[in-house]
Image 1 (cartoon, rainbow, N blue to C red):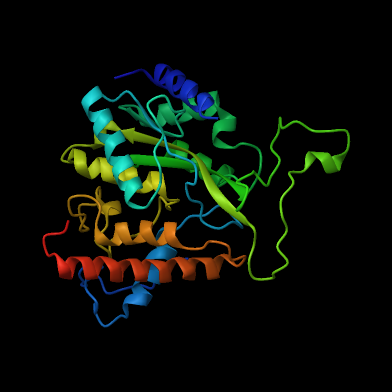
Image 2: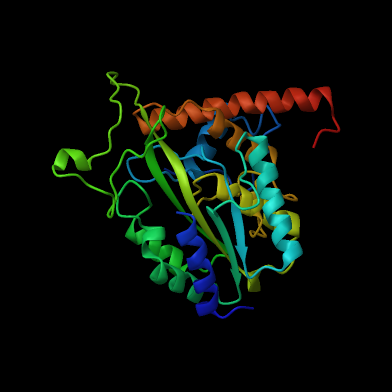
Amino acid sequence: MLKPTLAAAALGSLLFASGAMAQPQDDAEEPTRLEDLTVIGRPLQRLIESFVTEVAAPNQGRSLARWRNPICVSTVNIEQDGAQYIIDRVAEVADRVNVRSGGPNCSPNIVVVASADATNVAHAITERSPLSFRPGSSTTDQGAAALRAFRESAAPVRWWHVSFPVDRDTNLRAVRLPGDPCGDTPVSCAPAVKISASNLTTQIVDNLQRVIIVVDSLQLAGIESRQLADYIAFVALAQIDPQADTSRYVSVLNTFDESAASGEGMTEWDYAYLEGLYKAQMTLKNTRAGNLEIAQSIHRAHNRLADTQAADPSTD
């Protein structure tokens, strides 16, 4: 294994190159499978809304972010075959929700680092590359308290998302960051973006810019490669709350929870969540309304998946 300082140095170079709670439920209830249309007497829409509320973790005051630019996955301290498996699996899941992958020489924007000393590595990389984690605007990340939690986490996998508000049509950044070129007047310092006249919708959407994932290699006993790669793919493609309680659902997020149903990797809940997230319009100003839009989009994705399953029972 790489020492923390070496892993931090390797990860630092990659980073610089890349530029409410669910309603309580009886403990005796079985985890919910998305393909069940009637589960424990609770309407499917309520279950979906509960799942979205539980797992979604947008930046404060912002909507959920998504990838619009091609993703580029790089790994640190993972042997070659395992690294390639993770890279290929993330790309495969991304392709399913129409997220493009970069070419062989792309600049990494999803970095996965493994270490037997994950907490020290997390400290080292955040200290070495602070602007990679907190670029300088309150809209781009989860904030200082969340970064401390990232550093001190004892979880087998921890992650950190950086996203930018951008103009929906031009894809230009809608916030100014420290170090941006500035003209002679304060007005020239501000990015030029279109302003929507609507009180309900906005021209500004949120794009994922960078994801850093740290894996504690000492906590992988009994975890299969497919499970780990699927877990990484899910948190790389969506802003997921590390504290989310998904024990009521059959989800890849339960991979490390022995008391919950995790399956063998990505489940219909997970695929429907990603498909719903990436098919939603995401231009509503009200973030609660935006979450409802995603839940409705997930419901439609569920119906498509159910129809496919009914037509071809062998479909994975």
